Length: 345
Image 1 (cartoon, rainbow, N blue to C red):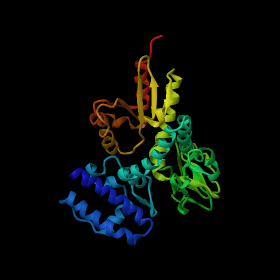
Image 2 (image 1 turned 180 degrees about the horizontal axis):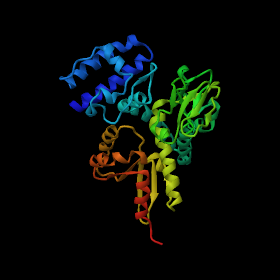
Image 3 (image 1 turned 90 degrees about the vertical axis):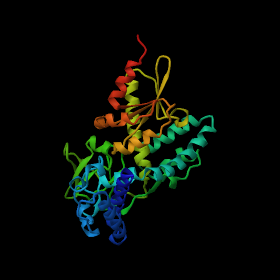
Image 4 (image 1 turned 30 degrees about the vertical axis):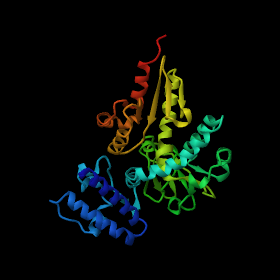
């Protein structure tokens, strides 16, 4: 029960921060509820008023929220009255059950359509690649992929909101191509995967300058372009980048690696000498939320779960929570493990 309350508190805090950035009046009842729950979880601490708690949202949560509550999240939830990367990640990961239902409803319609067609494997693979490679699109770009499957563009893409436009331009992350919030002083992609790959910038005058290599990032006119919906960016595009990188690496090592086989029965399937192995890629910030997801995999399913190399420290926790048929590796560990099963020359 305490764990559920801690997750509920994090959800309230993230939602309160999002409301504060839009309309403080709407945030007030959520802040009061969060304050009451925080006092319940920490009865020895001095209770915070809604106003005091709102002020704390702009300071790193590791400075005022106990580790057993905040888990792996860190940093402020608000900066200059705008939600931070941490806040956005929390909103997506802590509301995963509701978001997953929305995503699955759309993607399942695509799967069902593809499984009824002789060319379904190719159509589905093109669909998945399109979402991974097109975080921002002009509507006409989707025609060749969406029309054959009778898909509605509005189920997957939405207009780019005003707060992601700066001086009439949008600034796309060089790694995933999703629009970044250029109104922040320090402009980073909301994805830890992309930040690890140096998608970190600073606004200097009217230019975005990469903080690692000092290269400028040019803004582009948004025109009538659309952006991938947040849940699909989080749970389809982001792991898709890991899936593509892992498939490329395994192919370089001589394995036959198939992406989304049997119309997405798994993310990646590799062929060993006398058997196959199914692999799912996961790009989450919180290992605790990912562990909950892994625990739901049935015991009879043989599956490798692969996470980014920069999350190596999460491996022990995730392995403790694995069902019988599941193993967890980082990207590099997965490649090494596959090589152990390779056919001898």
